[in-house]
Image (cartoon, rainbow, N blue to C red; front, top):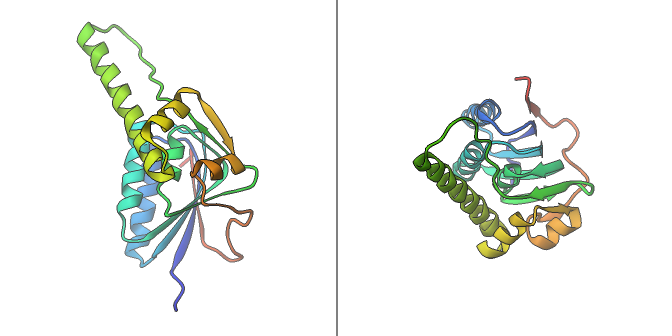
Length: 185
């Protein structure tokens, strides 16, 4: 059996247009170069739901194996990114923060615009809950309750919750190809 060509991507960034664009472009280039396995090493405060869900859908749809590994903290929509892995590891001291969607409204709004924003918040919350539910085998209602309670999970709790498939200290093997994605790119 031949070993799959693997690349490790250290995603130490917030989730926004630039970081997710860099991530998807990097993966597309490596797919074109014949890579068959991507290990995403995540430590992220979260960020924009739209871009996080985009990255999740992209990773689930590529013709390659995707493994995720929480190496620090996966918060908010970074939990959704973490859920993209067919195998989901976390380091022994890693944590997850699962909470509802936050909106930063500024300016003057009329009623229809406020209703529109409320609908977007509801939709984003339900989308995140469904992704986490599908991953953990919890009901959407259980996940929504977990989100409403702003739940922090340590490594053991994340495994009990069904988020993590294995707690694993080793992140990559000696000589592994590692690509860095951070805020400065």
